[in-house]
Each structure stands twice: as C-alpha cells, then as structure tokens.
Length: 438
Image (tube, rainbow, N blue to C red):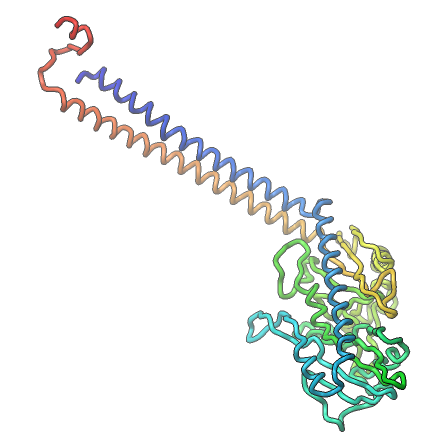
C-alpha cells in the first residue's frame, strides 16, 4: 500500500482517536483541576471571613437555642419535684424516684472519654414543718435515721449555708423554690491538677396535709448536668468536644441572674465557697491582683467594668431579657460574644431576665490566625492537586499518542496484508475509473 494511503489512514484514525478520547479526557482534566482550584479558593475565603455578619448571627442563634434548651431542662426539673409530691412518703418510693431519674454525661474512665449515666438528683429529702428531716436519700441510698438533721438551721445543710427550708416554707402550694448554684470552690491550682467543680441547685416546695403546712420536699440537681449544655461547645464548629480550650478563646459559658459565672471551661471562674462555708469573693478592681495571685478568680460580669466596660453592659442587657452580640477589645485582644437569656422564671428568678444567660465567646484575633493558617494549608493542597492533575494529563497524552501510533501502524499492516502482492502496478491507485475501464 502506498505511503500516501497509509498517511490518510493514519490521520483518519488519529482524528477519530482525538475526537473520542483525547478531547473528552482533556476537558475532564481541565474541569477537575478548575473545580479543585475554585473549591480551594471558596474554602479559603470562608475560613478567612468566618466571623462575617452571617456567621455572627449563626453563633447568636446557637446561643439562643442552648439557652432555650437549658430553660426547658430546668422546667422539667420543676415538674419532677411537683410530681414527687404525690408519691408515697416512703424511703422505697423516694429511692426508686431518684434511681430512675438519670441522664448521660461525658466523663473520663481509664483514660477514655465515655458517656455515663448519672443521677440527676444526688440528694432528696422530706422535711417536717419544723425542718427536721424525715426521709433522706443520698446517691440513691437511704440515710440512717440517726444521721438525719434539722435543716431549718443552714449550718446543718450539706453546704453549711443553704436556706431552702425557710424559702420553701413561705411558698404557696404548687410553687417551687430554686436556689443559686451551690458548691465548693475549685482554685486555679486544683483545676490544673484535674479537679472540677461539683455542686447543686436545690429545688424545694411545701407539702400540705389536712391541717395545713406539713413540711418541705426537696431535691438537689447535680450541676454537672447543667454544665453539659455548655462544656462541650465550640461556637465555630458543629462537632462537640470533651472540654473546650480557653486558650483559644472559643467556648461557651453560663451566667446566673446575679452575674456570676456558673458554668465555664475554666472551673476556677465558677462561684463557690470555702470549707468553712464562706463565699469566695469575685474579682473586683481593688482585689483582682491579690485574688489572682491566690488562684481565686471568681467572675461576676457585673463587677468587671474595670477590665472592659462592655462586660457589665452585656450582663445588664441579658438581665433585661435581651439577646445580642458585641465585638470589643479585652486585654489587648479583639473579642466577640453572642448572648441569650435563659427564660426559666420563678420567684427567685423573676422576669425579665429569668435564670440567667448563655454566652458564646470567640477570641477573634486567635481565631483569624487559625483561619489564615487553615486557608494557607487549603491553598497549598489545591495547588498541589492541580499540579498533579496537569502532570497526569501530560503523561496520559504522551501515552495516548504512543498508543495511537502503535494502533495506526497495526491497522496499516492489517490492510496491507489483505492486498495481494503485485495486484497493482507500481504507483497505481485503485479508483472508480479502473472499474469503468473494465
């Protein structure tokens, strides 16, 4: 077969090969590379602008949702106590009630983080009209009769200062007294050694018989269950954590209606008391240096105007039942906080603020530094993938053209083998004119 005809066959095969394989493959590679590049740019932009107004609003919504969940949780505890007033007044009945009311919390066991079922109410007691305990359940077990005390005297209560009997005694039927968070203070040194805050919120209500006031029924809510709502939150991410790192400035916390912090990743900021029953004072301008040296850093946001005037302003707005957001400077760093009120109300937690509020705090400078680092990593990965795809495309093209060359040679040889040698003279090409000549 002549060289001209072989060339025509080669280019015919090449055109078909190019149209069916090379062009689609090239377009696909270009689209993939462009897609990866655009994805990298988009993710980078989102990382750098993570605290744009839309994202800030999202964090505010998160704060509001958590605040509503806490309010619902506290309302359920109030209902539990009112339900308990109709139970038989026996040790067995109260033991069953306590042991059936549990909720999962995150904890560490043998170095592993696990969810474990924990009692909601580590204490429950029935007290007569004079304040003498008649039945008391502690950690699911009944306290012996000779260990019962008169809680009309606060010094006899678990934390030596509790006045829940006097407060509940003055209420009407169906009303519930809810105490402030009460517990032993955890210093900064103890916190660094692994100790964590433990305390309770008392729920107490009067009980009546045919003659009138007969006593008080109360239980103590373990505040670990309250802290579960905030301890595991990183405001800028969906995945929960065991304990937020305050060094990042990216965490959630809870404040009561007095302005005291009652849940925080750093437990030494939570209000508590000493062994003798005296309260550890909160930081104030005159005492902050001395208390900080001792590792006692209780925070009351109403008193922190000396650190930043925005802090008491935030607490004041939340106490008025308002939610909001603020960006401000604190300690030389830019801070963002979204806050929302916990709409649980009683005589002890009146409107408009109710129980307190949820805060979602972010150190904007630290977060932007992390976001920029993440963006640079994303950009580097995108460039790496794009380069890899281009390299693969080039190698593929070389291989494809080599395969094309081999394929065209094979086709030419096959056609040549089918034409008998000498059937056409030298330089003679078969055409329709040859057929006409016949």
